[in-house]
Length: 111
Length: 114
Image (cartoon, rainbow over all chains, first blue to last red; front, top):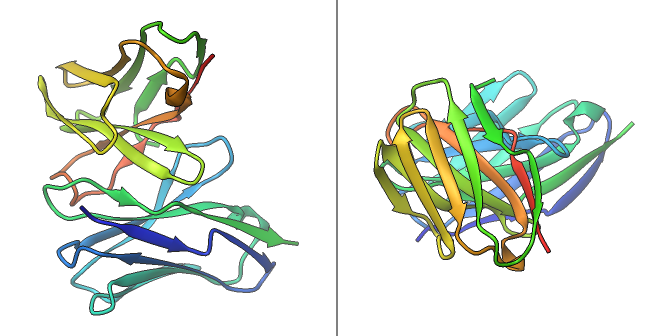
């Protein structure tokens, strides 16, 4: 099956700086890559997703990039704010198959 | 937020007892999923359903069973709970084809087995 690796496991940044979280996947047939944000004690919430037919997608301060050749995708958060502090999960999937999640990155934004 | 309700939200029980967790959706989505979340493991799929009475196993299905008698309800049962099943359990739903559409999660059930 698919194997998704996520790095780093913890990340601390100063408020206003950028944060980057990277994921790699093993199955070249995977074609859908969502990112979830989970605040402490809350549900994972979808924040952005990308499909394999595009290389980059942006939504205000967050963006996701995908490199199909290298089989990795990254979440970029610019101008970080304290409310961005949370655990972020990446996932990879393909039609007719299950989602495989990374092990999460705990992001702390220091005011 | 997606209309997903999990019950109970918290439960403490003893080893060997049966436990049933309920997931209820108001979105009329076809696909429903049960995950467990443990430190260092992220979210792992236990079972999923692709319609009434249609279910299949995920990567960590041993010790769990599921049932879906109505579109809106998906039950997860631990027939004889063990301490290794202490975890946070999340239900998720998706509208379209499995693996190709975003999943939306419920608030979770924190289950402790003593």
